[in-house]
Length: 372
Image (cartoon, rainbow, N blue to C red; front, side):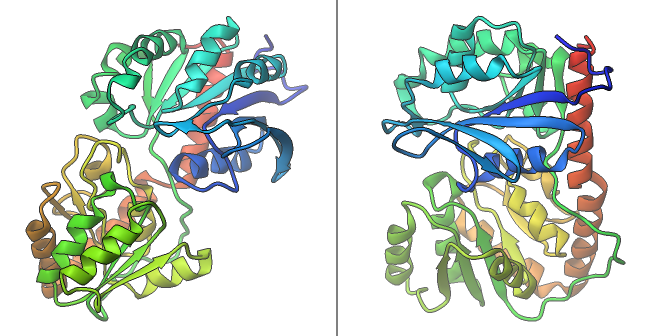
């Protein structure tokens, strides 16, 4: 194994994750940002196709090896060739960076019996899958014991997640980040009563409670995102007589999303389960000066947007609390402007993309130089 201090060749890092670009999602976007943003490291990505035969292609100059997928069980791809693909790529890599949850990764790694150093980002735990995951739990614990470094995205995950607690001595907090600039910060002022949600339409996102909350909000809601819950949510909006004030945009372009952030007044992340480990969409909203209403989950969600500083935090699953928080922000102009400025400052100070990239590269080099 080469030392990271050797300057004749860039270190080689293999990222292992469930899916990758053009598939979009929280973890996938983070991996894409890492492999395109760290200049002094060579990267490859090992992942699975969404369904069908495997292939090898190139994205943004990075080799992406996609194992064939027979289908999915509890959101986990069935990729029988993954251990073989991993073993092949480990011959190239100086270090392998796993992104969890993705049970295929740890299982394949243990089968490979490799001494390649491991960094693992624990984005969140395997939650809500029932007894089918029980055999995986000891495998995950064994895999995390073998990792040289465990990364989490918030102090909340490090301090409150029982899965991570046994590995606290090798756990590093690296918050996710978004692009920031040095333009002067100025308070945003509500120009209407427009509420925005961005995310996948799945049960743990809690959008059903936000739709119900709109019965108590004098304003409109725009829902951006796709997922299996969309039709049910549309029927709910009609049944609760808010169909005229709730718009489902579906998937939108980056330009359209930027426009929606720009014209909205309050951003809401109403998630109800710990599957929501961070909520990077909060950063996107905060960077635009939008106050946030989020929920008091035992994850990084309330760490990103802080109650009474950059927005308001309410109990999960409470439509009335969501409505009251939205109305409070829209009615109190002085509070709104204060939270708007605080939100922009917090993103620049704590959640810049540059910080995420810099600290991740530092971990790679520490591990390869023999550090803990």
